[in-house]
Each structure stands twice: as C-alpha cells, then as structure tokens.
Amino acid sequence: MRHRNFVREYLSSLFDRQLMPTAFKVALFIGSLLFAINHAWALLTGHMTSERWISGGLTYIVPYMVSIHGQYIGRKGLLQKM
Image 1 (cartoon, rainbow, N blue to C red):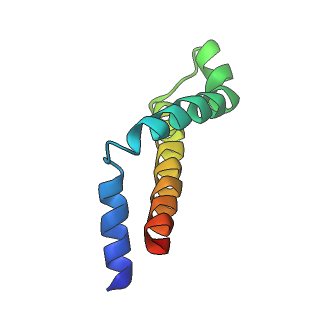
Image 2 (tube, rainbow, N blue to C red):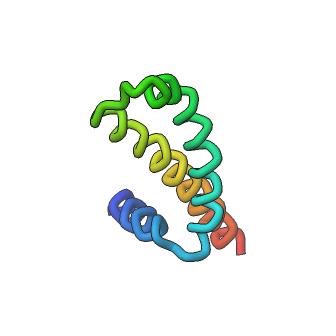
C-alpha cells in the first residue's frame, strides 16, 4: 500500500507548479545535449525517421521526470525532518 501511495504522489508531482520550472530547465538543457549526441547526425543528413522522433521526444521527457523525482524526494525528506 505504501508503494502505491508513493507512485500516486510522484505522478501528481509531475504537474506540480512549484517543481515544473526547474524540471523544464533541466529537460531543455540535458535533453538538448542528449538529442545532439544521439540524433544530430540523422537530423543534419535528413535521416530522421518516426522512430527517431519518438526517441528524440523521450530524450526530453526522461530528464524532466528525473528532475521531478529528485525534487519530490528532496521535498519529502525536508518535510519528514520537520
């Protein structure tokens, strides 16, 4: 039951207006860096397939989710110490 509650809280934190600005910045910076490493050559040579575009989108989504997770865990830890 505790695990379900954690997952539910984490999923709701993905849209937390206090956490989103930092997560967007992290996703933009890290996602762009990873996109350049993984897809720049295909983009420049015109070899971007639909599968590559999906992968490129995930390149931004994953850092966003990781940033939210870190902020969520950090905030949860601070609240438990109070």
